Every structure is written in structure tokens, then in C-alpha cells.
Length: 223
Image (cartoon, rainbow, N blue to C red; front, side, top):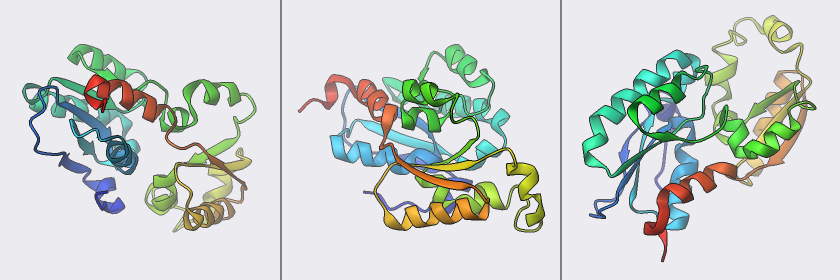
């Protein structure tokens, strides 16, 4: 599988990645950089050579109001080259603006409020909502990039005393593991300790992401 640098995925995203084969029904996936590892793993495992991937910088999540315009730019620039474009973003804090933009552009997007939900499975995540409203979630990518997305942006590297202000109403850090990696498990436990939260690891695999991409891949994915 393609070797990816998480810092690059955070700040620059992923330039178009795909084969040069000439399938008639090529599909472009426009995704968050935080999902690049998982999407490429699913492409490789399933032989989805007709799916190309372009990722926007993962750190757009720090400014979610910028996501719809960034997605629109890619869709507009690449529409003529593909039979279909599929947006691999959930709402991601855009307050419905991304869904409205995708509807305006005539492209579909993955269902769910955020990646924590579709990794868990949207139905399963919703069923746990009442009992886990004090949980703080991390995925594989966010465990690896904890300092870039949590610790430094919140100023905790400079003012650790702010921890209780930000996280005083949380009780548990839940690591939604996409892979079985003891090193990531240990790092996630350390993240919980740094936030003074109880720790729970839950293996989710790829959840609804796998289902959604299988549907997008369609008959062209069949052996």
C-alpha cells in the first residue's frame, strides 16, 4: 500500500492517487486526508483499481466552514474526467452546508455526522449516543496526529492548566481502532492519560466506510 506521511495529509492532503488503467467507469473519491490510509487499504484489499482518490488537507476540520468550498473546487475541476464523483466526508461540523453543496453539485456523499459515527456504523453510534455523551473519540489517524489536532491547537502544550476547562465534562476517551496495532493502542492510552480521562479501546474496523465504498465501486469491482 502507498506509504503516506500523516503530517502531509494534515496540511496538504493527497494529490490524485490511482492507476492509469482506462476503465470506462472511473470514479473519483474526494476525501478528507484523515481517511487516506483507510480508503487506500480498502482499494487494495478489494481490487478497486477504477477508484481514484484525492484528499483535501485533514486540518480543514479546524475550520469546517471551509470544507464545502474546497470540495466544490475539486468537483468542478475534475468532473469532466470521471463518470462519477463521490465525496468521502460526513457533515464534519459544517452544519449541513456540505450536504447542501453536494446536492447543488449533484454528487453523493457518505452518510453520517462525522467519521466517528460511520466508523462505528451510523446506527450503532446513534444507539450509544445517550450513554456516551461524555466520551471523547479518536481514530487511528487522530491518535497518530493527537498533538497536531488536539494538544497544540487547544494551546495545551503551552497552557496545560486549560485541560480541565476543555475536558472537564468528559469522562472517557474512546479509541475507535481501525486496525490492530499495539503501538497505537499504547499511544491512545497515553492521550487519555494526558487528558485525565478513562480509557477504552473499541475495534471498529472500517464500519460504514467499507459499505459505502463497496456501493460506489459497484459491478466494476466484481471479479
